[in-house]
Image: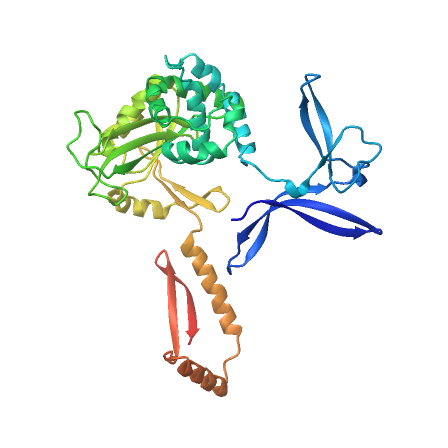
Length: 431
């Protein structure tokens, strides 16, 4: 990548030369050639901008202690008579110093203010005796994870220098202390429940979020470290979703709304069974947010029959949507087959079978097999309409395959696709 420089574009219109300027840099193209990549379009800088606009900058006048606007003109052009405050720029000596990301950082700071997180953390995160402003450090970490997720080390070594957060947050630091970044999250754990309650209120006020449907799931993250570990450490060997049974792991349980707003999370030992986690989270949500009619959506491997029975008999009852265990599908197959389909929404049909212990629901929507079947039917129709190849064409095709080193065609093959056990299409493939 080359050094950014100014590039002039000339256009003759109505007998007059118009000069437009762009900030560009030289980069390598796909074939290794040098090409100019535009960075910023500056527009036209001359006296013809009176009726439209004139490039200006805001400068601070130290004598008058006030800001003023100065118009910009290139050095080789004279300043128009109607412009009073102007400055001529030596474009040949123009250079860019420390370009930084400003717009996204400003939007993230505005979002932080809209969520009232500044006031929330001001009451809970006091500055250290050494003067470390934990609240501001936390804001930097949050914005960094929102805009360009990465490690604290990368934030310390690279990202901070390319952002404008030092000016937006009033932190005139060339480099953030990496130890402060690592220690900041330790200050937050005791305020976790209060933070979730605060965010829930703000999400309701700002976005009208609803919390009557909860999505519950578990995931894991592994560590390439060897035991033994200190007493109470949650890193354990267990079922690895990452296909790394040789590594210790921790389980992360998370509850979110359909829109993606998180309500609670928990870090569990790596050998925790999925079936043992739901009951504790039911109590946690009820304690933290109160009793309410909620619908829990989860995988079929998470709840047990005892937990589902407790959810049905709770006061008020807790509704749930969970996958039917495979062992029960065969028992329900005959009854569901006898029912008729009902339209739930466009392209989605359901069959409902009310029972004492819930309502089994069979749903159907167009999937990859159905799309593949439709594509196969269309191909079959096109092949049936296509004229049969002449003997000379078949001979030339055979010669071309032989010359290319490929095996000659062995005639016509047939491919049959099935959807739901029924043949839906047959495609003829000629070599």
